[in-house]
Image (cartoon, rainbow, N blue to C red; front, top):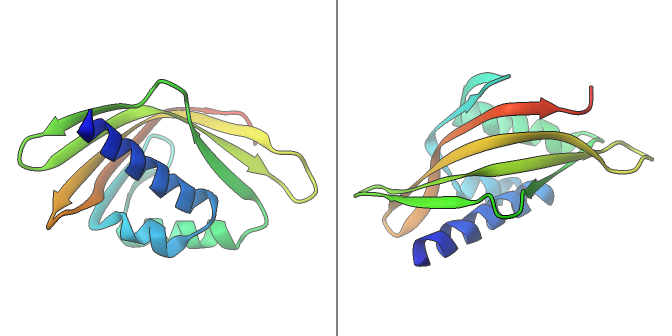
Length: 133
């Protein structure tokens, strides 16, 4: 329960930073050794992801991530940290338009606890359903 609550809090903090376009907060929760595996976009590293976040935040299109209710699962990884799984949805708002469901996907995030700090080292995002072109 304590581990689940900790990771749920970190997930919320990470995506609150995403939703509010807080690049520095996002970076603080990502490991320099980040590897992101995306079924549609391929494999990217820390620098590529930070650059993608920066470009996204500078654009007019606003994205918002929402965790699907009751999908979050957290399990310990001995001497490392935790694995988090779930389903999330992304919503897009184009300038002058209403927010619309953009995509939904399953995800896995590996969290490493090092020197008392949690950071995401691996992300796997798969099973995407794209709703907007």
